[in-house]
Length: 146
Image (cartoon, rainbow, N blue to C red; front, side):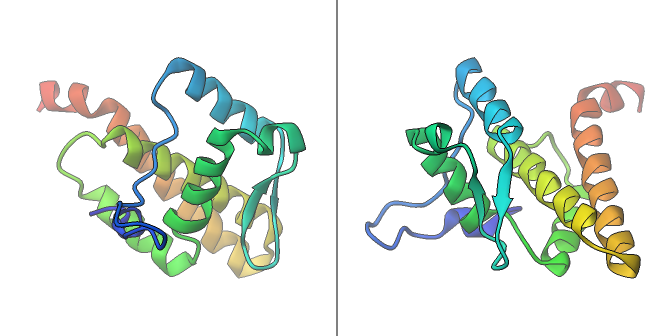
């Protein structure tokens, strides 16, 4: 399991958390808008959408849940995820791909905000996530050439 936090039970019900943003092309465009609208990451590493109008949308609540309850935030957790992704035997499910992209966005932000050795560590994690996503996108083609 790549994102164990996504399989937790919701506090307010017996349903599983497991949110997914992209169920249609419109959802993909909306995710792109969320990312372009600029994100705020506070000292507690909580991610929020700065644009109030976008932040008020129902999909923004799912975005908030994924960013603040599901994706890993510590460098140790992100390295563990990268390791799991590097040996993942099949194409990622769309929700895992989406979560990996969002983890990569968070990692890029942390790299940009860090200095020295920490910057290098975050940048290395970003590159590892990029490689995992590239491998996933090329997976069907890699199988044909093997």
